[in-house]
Structure formats: structure tokens, C-alpha cells
Image (spheres, rainbow, N blue to C red):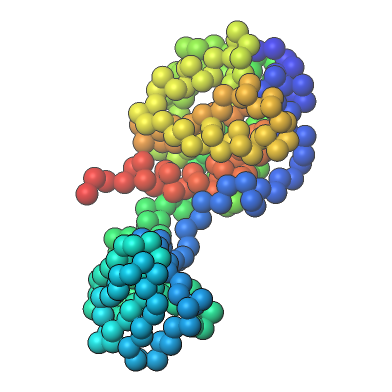
Length: 291
């Protein structure tokens, strides 16, 4: 590979900041938030002076037709019909649904059994039960000019794993050679002490950038979200030059493998912001026994 592919003039993009704040770039966390209203729309009748105190309510009929809503709590409610269609709000759990917010709090109409829904646990299982608590990582630097003593990108990846309490099982340098790189990754994923593999370098568009072609040919399952998210984060620093970055990831024999650009900042960004937080979960899922 060309030497400039691993420094600040890297054709894959120079990530020019040491620290990265991506709090608003991609928020994928799940929280126990209210789910969408299965009753189609939230109807607010506050402008017509509705008295919701358990008495029958008669309202002006704007189109000459009276519209009665289903009485779920034993009280008749007549609401103005503004569009000529009757609105039927089925009660899924036998409880009355009040569509007016009388106390300033939002009503959750997706709770059919009176219990709050935790969106991280839809079937009663802990989705992180199989996470690998302590990873063994293999770091492969793809370069014809770097050595282990002069490998800032590899150092950044190793530091990210170690600072999170994981171990670096081994590091090695492989030249920009398709067969050599494919053989190295195939050998590393077969080791008992390796739970994840990270390569740096060779993800650009120069003729000797063959990392993506070599490694992706081994994928049992591709993880397109990694490359998408990495490029999204990178755009904040390098702008449209992100189109030249082909970072990717996938699983090889149940081991997640991530391919990062060869610049130090790109390696730090990808490992600290995406790989280290997600690798334990991915490694656990990829090796989970079939149920």
C-alpha cells in the first residue's frame, strides 16, 4: 500500500480530532418509551368544552349526523363529527381509554395488559445474557511500510480494548496481499483466545487496497450497519471525503471481524465509538447455541 494511506493524508479520510462527541449522531438505545397508539390517532376534544366527569355529553353535530363512540366504562360519550365518519376506539383490555389529557401527562394506549412495556425485552429474555464479558482481540495492521514498533493505528485499537477491560491476544502486520491477508484472518478466528478481529488499513480505493475484498470473502454474515455508522461518524470530521472509505464488518466462523482505515484517528474513532461497545454483544450472539 502507498505509505500515505496510513497518515494524515490517507485517501480513506483524515479524522482530525482526538476526541469525538457523537451523542446526537446515532442514538439507537432502547428505552421504555411509550409505543405508538394502536387506536390510529390521538383525539383531542378540548376545544368543544367536554365535561369528562361521568355524565353523558351532547355536542353539536357539524354534518347532521350524530356519532356515538364505544362506551368502555359505562358512560355514553357523544363527540363532534368533523369529517363525517364515525370513530370507533376499541378497548383492547376492558379498560376505559380517555383520549383527553386532563393532567398534562401523556397516555399510553399501547399497553394492553396494564403493564409497562420494556422495549429491550420483548419476549421475557435478557438480550445481553450471552455477551462476552472479557474479549480477546486480535489486531492486524495491513501495510507494507509499518512495523509493530511503528503502528499508531494498531496502538489506538489495542488501547481502546484494554481501556475497556478486554485483552489483546495478539498483534501482527500483514502486507497488502490478498492471499496473505485472507489466510491470516482465517487462522486468527480459529484461535480459542480470539473473540474479535480488527484490521487497519487497505480499505481505500488504490490498486493495492485489497483488505475489503480479501476479508469480506470470508464472511458468513455481513454487518452492513458497522460501515454505515462509521461513515456517518466520520463525515463530521472529513466531510464528503468519507465516500472513499470502505470500512466494513462481518462474522467469520462466529467471530466478528472489523475492517478499519489505516489512519490513527479513524482507527481510534471506529474502535472506541463502535467496535469496543458492540463487540461483546456481537461475539456472544454469533456463538450462541441454536434454540
